[in-house]
Amino acid sequence: MKARHLTIATWNLQKCVGMDLRRNPSRSLDVLADTGAALAVLQEVDKRLPPRPAALPRAMAEAADWRVLDVSPLGPGGPSLGWHGNTILARPGIDIETLDHIDLPGLEPRGAIRADLTTPIGPLRVIGTHLGLIRRDRIRQMATLSRWLTTMPPRPTVLAGDLNEWGTISVLAHAMPQLRVLDSPRTYPAPRPLGRLDRFALSPELTASAPRTHTAQPARIASDHLPLLVKLSQRDKAP
Image 1 (cartoon, rainbow, N blue to C red):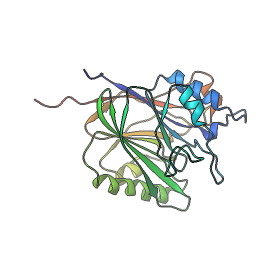
Image 2: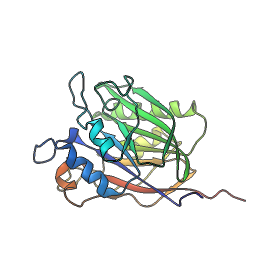
Image 3: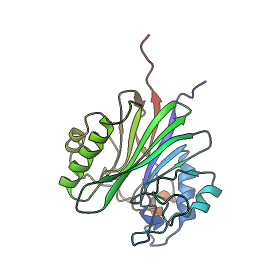
């Protein structure tokens, strides 16, 4: 029997460096555990400079009962945990069908990841991304993801990540008409949020609770972003 909902989190870890300037991956994992999420779509899980070693060590994540989805082109033996800093962690009970990574255009190196999963609410496609700092690049990046989606078999889809958009989200939403961008509370900066930078977007087959931030300490100091959570459900099919 299918579960009624699936809790998913998106969070920019800021390389596990908190507002106290301490790199503390154990603290980041404690925050993720506190959210109760079954899926975590993460950004900035790797350090910035080549060879971009993982800021969130794989062994620590696995010891905390997370499965690391191997989206890095170098595989589990490489230094990085993700692709352009993006990765997905899954709790037991979620099975992987296929994984992929996507290059995105722009002045800065950016990318997205894709996981087709079997979850307690049914089949699910998860896209994780961290868009650029320049708006014209963000629009091109969303348009690239939109075109890429048209090449994929239909599947209930959620996009999650740091979209870096301080202005009206409709500009980016227009570039990806297949998905509905949800309203979001403010997530950045974590101590006193002003910007709605972190977002979820859903295909028509999915419905969701209103996104909410996780504010219980140490979330407000573990990163410069707050974790954002949503409960996903699949819409009932018409008889």
